[in-house]
Length: 310
Image: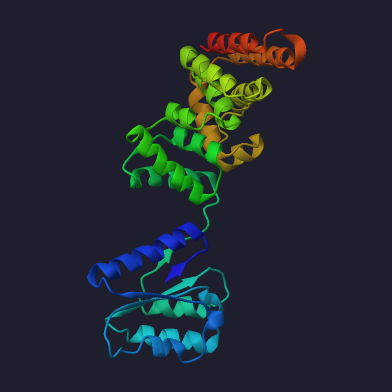
């Protein structure tokens, strides 16, 4: 029983079941079924012993739409399953068709949960698991950077994780994400900001030049710097003792980002944050027409932010 509607996870679960059956019986047939093409009696027919032998994997898609009669057939088979026929019911979750889920649960069917991955923390966990699946390692910050670059589609993320491990030899850090996705404005700008706020001047300048060389607009980089420094000010100015969901709601920031900024704040004073805010405000004016050389203005801003730290 596969419950959930995260397509990539559902397809993987079906593939793993089929692979385990074919490991025992290489000639086992995988049959995909949909409720719209099923008539009462068809499931009983397909699960009956074959004169020619051979195993089967019956995959019933959208099992929540089976209806009363077909649900009864599935449960009847599940009470006394054949050794050479494995039945996989894919249910999208929710109340519709719940009788099937409840019935299979009572019969102790193996359950694989494939819910939608919607929260940032869940997506970070998915990326880290994908990297491990491919034989590599990735830090939480690099995982978030990859999410910023690629987006939330699990298929694209899985492909990116596999490619990164292949290209880097397995160790995936911020620099690797920036190197392979440096054409993405979101990664380049925020990577520059993170390096500057963490006090790594040489790395911040390297990422800045990289971003500019690949066509990232100076105004986007200033925006990323401003967001990073404003985050320090917001979290640093929060009431003492505030935490968790209440703090996230008050600041309008997700909990994972608050935790990240709190770590960054350990190297900052209130005066330093104020100087950094002034630096990014000046940079904003300069890249919007006030400076003859926006690249030089950005380099000076990064240096000023690093100098303000401490």
